[in-house]
Image (cartoon, rainbow over all chains, first blue to last red; front, side, top):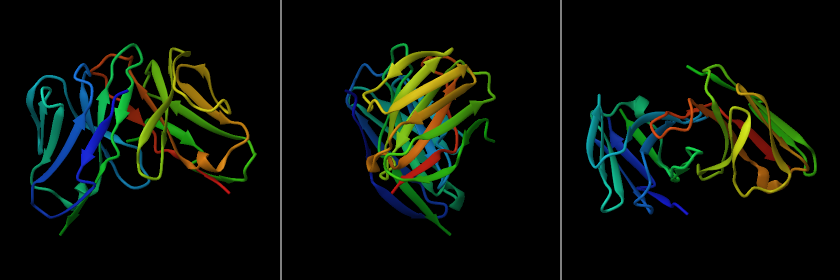
Length: 112
Length: 114
């Protein structure tokens, strides 16, 4: 069964700093990898996804995927207080269900 | 902007009671899900429906049962709740089960069992 582990558990950064989050997964045959953002009392919201090895950039977000090392990272440039949230890594284990397996998340706090 | 609507937002009940959570999506998606999020923020899939057909049924206690009247609605019933059922239940939808399709979540229904 797919296992998804995230690090660090929590992170506090000053406004404007780079936020770097890590995620490791266990199944090299997994399909796309997703990052979700969850604010308190809200549902998770999809931020960015990646399937192929390498990197993908969207606005302030950059995601790096290395399937050989079963590792994906998310970097948020020029962080803002509104970026304070829990960030969840999710792996699509494929099949007809499109099932996502989630990690436990990283709590990010951006202080002004 | 929310397009997956869940009711109720919050519910407190006693052990042994029955609880129902409702979910409706206005995105025209074919596939809907129920996830359970525990106190450590870990989300675990419970059920998935595609066009009213059950396609995923993870190992959950029998007291949990999903109900779908059409592809826009997916409800969750819990018969005889237990203390470990206290969690946030999140409904989600996506346009089909293809790998690149985004999963959209509702805001969740928090259940507290006393």
